[in-house]
Image (cartoon, rainbow, N blue to C red; front, top):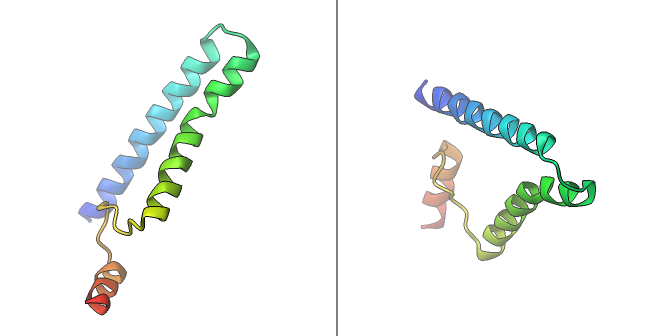
Length: 77
């Protein structure tokens, strides 16, 4: 139950941050070209972080320890 509550809280925080970001970006008065470049920065940063983590072989991000991850860790030992 605690995991579900934590997951919903995380999604709510992401939603609020996303809504705030869209609100700020829609009210900012800069050239359309620069605004279109800036609006994709979070997506690009998340992609770079994800690909870097995959290349470095980081498996456990420490967010949720599922049974599948625990069984996989036991099998590799």
